[in-house]
Image (tube, rainbow, N blue to C red; front, side, top):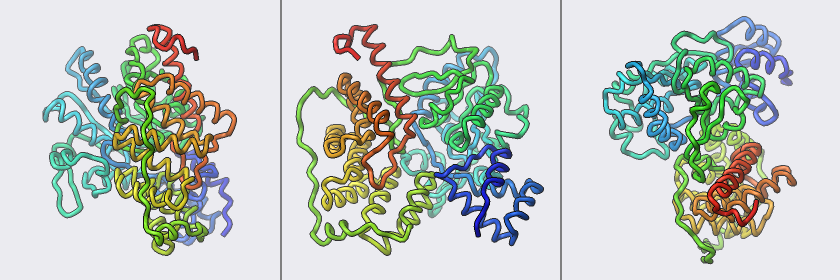
Length: 504
């Protein structure tokens, strides 16, 4: 059945702000066919039904949105909130009013519960008198899961066991939050695009709006930010996901960088923004849940490149088989692009079961393994691919990222250098190298790397040299971060004399 998507796209955008372009249009088609079949309606009748039924509209939106999340996602942001922003807000309290924290687009609750647990560690079990916590989402079904507070192992990927043992009761593969943590949070159904803003969402001190604005076009994002600004108190702070920073810098709220992390404040209070601390970590290109490694000084010394263990001849031949498939790989890649990682893993597992030598599927599976911090398995797959094809940029980049997040900085640099040697236009490898050199205080090398990234993105339109893997951050975000770090290093060099002799 051929669908005219235009009226559905317009209705969905007007109703909740979701925008469907080429990259995520397949998801819209899939969900529409599911609902047409379930209700046994023609497209025209279903469109009429959507216009008339708020319940069906919400059902459709619930199926279109991605609710994949996990505890302590982007942990450096949470650490910064707990150790820097919250104490600052508490010190400014002129009365015993609690700090009010709201997670917009809270999904199944892992984000707001993570903050409750982290603050409990710092302030003890009496946090109820000092904080109020709330979450809201358009999806009533996922909010019911948040209120239950029970999660599978998958919600704990990359999380230290301490948190599960201290705050959850576990049985088989189900882990349920202790009642005192659950009772600290209230959950509310709320459409941030169209619903009237209730009183309970006014005067918010900390508003988390992470991995939500990716669904909106710029016009909708601007309007939502204006609504969010009206929800914040005059000292309020907005936290978005690291990869959404540039997209939300639209002049409504002021962007601040502190300790290498970005957040927004009300423009009216911009004169009180703290001075940024220079030359510390920026967000990674790959969706890893661990903070950047700290790297010691590494003068211009040479070190051996990592050695790839040679697999058996049979395995190497199997890994070198043709990647011709029935479209399942393309479908899995689209799911990864849409951040529907659970579904992507299922598709890749099915493909590898029927075609174990599919190199692309193996490497994309390794990409997802790195997100879950299963580094040994990811490295094994990447080394196998590299043994069959020493020029595999995908394998080299995976090995570099895996080494980086295991804090094997020298090894990571070596892998990324191999990648740029074989494909100079591989800007993700150049970006990783620039970051690693910056962490190691090799500022001239870092500046060179950032300049190369900007040049490649300007000249090549984002060509990566990768055959199978997504690069990570949007191109505009990488441009912004690279230019920002160059500007910071120039400013630091000018004020302190450091690097001043090298020029820009």
